Length: 194
Length: 240
Image (cartoon, rainbow over the protein chains, first blue to last red):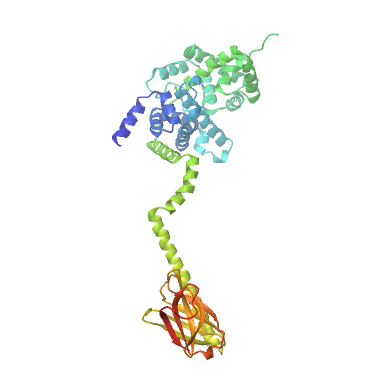
């Protein structure tokens, strides 16, 4: 690395997320690299929690950052933080892949198929979160939910299933699923937002 | 008329787990209901929070490497690529280094073509010499003015012949070679010709009299278009 490159890397490392995105819109590769260093783990974790196949999660991670590289201009600070934007892109992308694989059973890895609804306990105490206050708050909030509410929430959040699909999957009445989702969300809102 | 809110559907809508019809209903309602829109914003925040509570995994370093490689490839905008594609080919073709290569290849091609033509010419002349009962080949040799020059005249019939020459110097534009048919000291023009850059040349001759009437032939350097009688230096000569 030349002195100029080191100084550029330091400059971007000191930038906030929004300015980094702005630099990415100007096709600054160092800015994208810094963004990846900050949130590559978040994006990969989201993809892996949804898809449970490392190679696919890697591919999704790469795709998400390429999408950021190509369309950083679509980021709107008024709609949320950069982290939220990235996590949302990653989640939707991974769910798309998950749903496509799910609709083509021949392409599904057997081990994955068996474990398809054995969720990675992502929403409970076992996860190793970054020691951020936000992560701690989310963990605490989720722990206040009954297991059956956490499960339907996870099926919706990580697998992109509709309430009807969840009902079919866990073999419970649709009304029961709707109630669990609503109660879980209301409780989380109360703890995390209000 | 009392508005029917979609409050109960909004948590699931924010989570994206409503059926298509229900989602459509909520969207339509949100267009005109600020109260429900505010509800939605609150639930969207819940969903945003959930992203930060997920179990963490660290991607292998290759992901970053591949990403940066791909970005490096994509840094050239498609339009630039197109322009580059068209112009870089021309630019490359006319670069000093490439120009020498192109010139060398062209020179070799020209030499090949000339040699091929010469070979064809010689072959056809030899065939004519061998095959035609009346065909006759007469050789010409260079004088001191053009010691390396040589040539031959193939007489097809009594008044038609072809002159082929080699190693004659290339003349300035104002000059041409002229063939003379010699009879009793008198010289009759057989025609004028120029040579190729490699010193080769040929001339078709329609003789006013049968070749048998002439005793010798010669080639001199004359002003462009030829002279009535030889005025310049003799470069080739031969006996008939």
